[in-house]
Amino acid sequence: MMKGKLTYPEIGQQAEAMAAAWEQLARQQDWVEKYIGNPAYEEVIFIGSGSSYYQAQTMAATFRYWIARPASAFPSSEIFLFRDQSSAKQGKKLLVGVSRSGESTEVILAIGSVKGLENWDTCGITCYEDSGMAKQTECLVSPFGKEKSTVMTKSFVSMTFMMQAAIAAAAGGGYSNEIRTVMDQAGTKIAEADAFAKGLIENNDFIKTIYLGMGSYFGIAQEACLKLKEMSYTWTESYGTLEFRHGPKSIIEQGSLVVLLLSETARSYELKVAEEMKVYGAYVLVITACAGDDTAFADAVFEIGATDVSDEARAVMYLPLLQYIGFWTAVNKDVDPDEPRNLTQVVKI
Image (cartoon, one colour):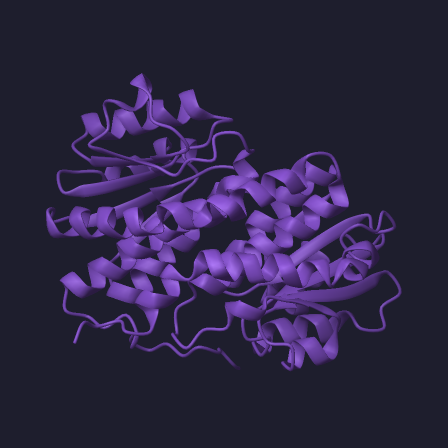
């Protein structure tokens, strides 16, 4: 029997998870108006741990751009241990907890640490409506994001998508149409991403993997890096695309895989970095909305589509391929991604 009997089907269920999140959000529009759409908050702070922190980064980037108000993302522990260093004392703040289980000690401690403070309100997003966080503060709930596997896959996609849909609803304009486009197209590339990742791993012997992304894709690059580590125990790193040129590129050598999460906003600049890494001997994989003459240099290109939406809306569409790369790397190493070493589904202190 193939390893990963829990993880593998959950990666493939992302389109259904997004559709369920969309339907649930329609029932929680009062939450959107009360929190994400409330102009009384001078800063919105998204917090989480591990994967939840990485999706918080994408949520904050989307909020800043679409709603044009300040937002930031921090590990949950920074808020309950270093709150005043993370956020200035003045100003009305909304703290948004992000947790698949809703039981992470750090997010619960962080939310509890600001309870009763004059300038702080809290809310959250989770997959479990009866969780500790959901009992502590009002939460969006991604109903089909619940997972049996340890590593986050469809939960990450469904919660990120759901929060972006909430931000789109609060922002107005055409952002909700973009989110609907992503939801409608999400399932079309999953099988292709699976086969592509399997072939990539089976036909190559990479000694290290580097994920590069900017803007709302920086958190996605970090998550991709974590997925490969969690599932396969492979050492990997992630960087802001242009930042990688400032020292870290020294690690590139023959056998390195560089995965570029290409944005349209910074397309020409990011491709210059990828071209440089190929000169140094890296195998370059470009993940993009649409290939072109400018991506012809790459060793492999995977098109995710949705060319008519913003980079932010498209962010979740990168994840199936990135998750399958982690999955097939694990299988190729005879490691079971359902049983990641030293890990549990919920981290408690």
